[in-house]
Image (cartoon, rainbow, N blue to C red):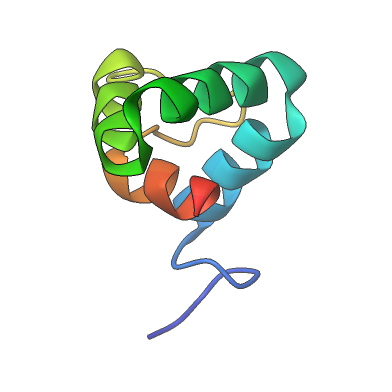
Length: 70
């Protein structure tokens, strides 16, 4: 399987960059994970961010969110 900077795809890499480097997004994700647990938190975040993209155009989806937060 081809990877992108250690991630499964450009989309997963870009979502990880934004989740882990944008303070507000990081804090939001951490609060959700702390409150709901990892698996339920990822599902909640995927639904909450459904249809949204990073400023670079990467789509927030369950797989990329899970990878960014693991």
